[in-house]
Length: 159
Image (cartoon, rainbow, N blue to C red; front, top):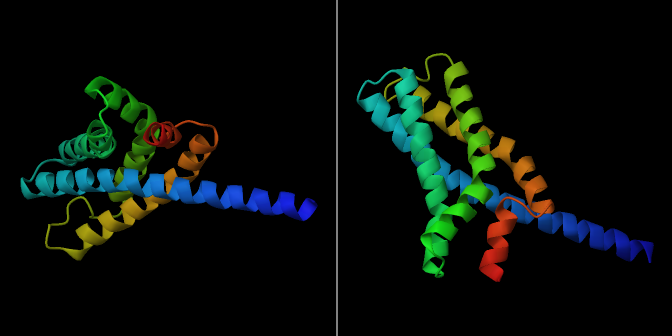
């Protein structure tokens, strides 16, 4: 009996980790597209670091929410409801990712001032995105375990 309870607990934890990982990758994908696009545009145009970061953060939220909203719209959800679900499920995750990502870029010497053809720019950006995903995973896992965050959208897809 105890072995069955331990096995069920392990399966639940494994399933929860898998769902949280998928949710984090989903969110990170949208964030990464926006972040990279914003960093590339700001760097290419020679913008200041605050302006480049503002653009990158704005685009990260836009693409992050978009990755949730578009599938909901294709399932027939009204735009207002899809937006509310995206805001409820993604805001905390995107916020954590953007804070970590941009802090890492700022603390790596020269990363924000490196050119688009420099390994320092791309390596720093890639590393910052990986760390952002690592930072968001436990938060997404906790939210899903408590029926919040991406769990809300998963319930909508299933229901």
